[in-house]
Image (tube, rainbow, N blue to C red; front, side, top):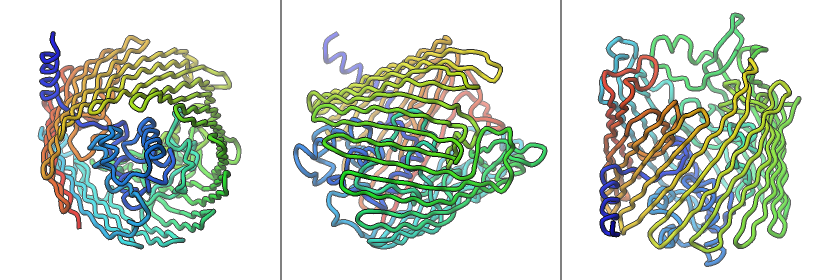
Length: 604
């Protein structure tokens, strides 16, 4: 087969089953991060690796490439320079347009935005026929944001399909800030300083090296479309050139499973009240959190500490596997001659968690070493996993390196050895991965491979050994205003499960017009799960998991200017080996689901 014929076949595949390019960050987290950095833009020319990595849509390799670009060629004047040098895609540059600045002179610009999202599944659900659901099948999300030099206002109202009104997810906040203070009233998210009190487990997470020029936000002033995110209350911070003090307090309604004595056995944070039965048991408990954080830096040293208290309005069942009460965190960082040493500890006043990092950065090589001791079932502080009461005690040893021998070639490897403890007996596990990024003027190729091994037992001491292999190759091709991409994945597990997935993308943007389309084809056996962030309508794609055999495609088109942006589209999901979608009464009389969506944004 000659080159032209091969390219023609490849192009036909792209056009027939395209998809939007995205990372693995979930849609709601991406929107929340984008809103946060819109209120508090990052000066990218003064940022460290950690600062850049915390931006939405930026991974390790991209953050390192941006940092080296600034060091080697000088300060950036626009994100278009990174696009021209093939460091980020035009879509990423567009998403980050309001999140970064290039000097401190743009602070205080007055701007506002109103957006509305309408989404509805077109097939008829039995849940509505049988009067189980109280509201109509549509989803509505309204957002309003305004910011000026010292004042910012955010509001969100969302109704999920089947809900009768917006009462489940109605939130907002108002923020006053000046050179020394920031005062927030309303909804905010609580962020652990070390990350050990959240649902991170043993990954090299974005909190591992938050040692940038920006201070950490214990109470992040952003609102989320997920109803279990965010507390209603207030936070105040004061900062000077060398230190920063944060104080916060808030509460929210949660949904608890109770024993015969009315004590909390576990907590379910996914608490949509769409049916009569759900209303009877959801939002039946209050969760409070109060805390303070202190950060100090001087020359090569940085110190941070926080203390917080989590409580419920009910007693906790002694048999439950999650805890609440007082929690504390300490962090110490040292920078010297290309080395970064960091130690973090967290405690519930009886046990403690520990993480230690060592990082060395040279011109072409960045190396990290990591050790962690995590007693997961004793810690909480807003952790979704801990609120469910799951998790084992673990310790881990890891090494991560990034090699960049040439400006257009990067290699990233993450390697972790860990032990899970159950009833004082240890069970080993490991995870190894390698990823390469190969860039030319208009093409990016990213092959990767991951191996996971784990030994564990259950409460009945039934021993299991699991192994998993995941291979992936991602290709992005840019041709003027068109971006084409493909994502091919294969997974294989020791229990006999395996699966394939092909996702493709077609994106076009030129001046006034926008168009994108996408699709995933998947095939798996014996329950193997395949993950993809493709094939979805909306401004940002969500992270989907597939099993069985099927395909999902979508098409979306619209236009935009400095005053507005409008996008409309429809998705189609056909599953060939099943006839149910969703859960509970949310069933349709078809193996195919069509979902329509309309997005409108107005800027003022």
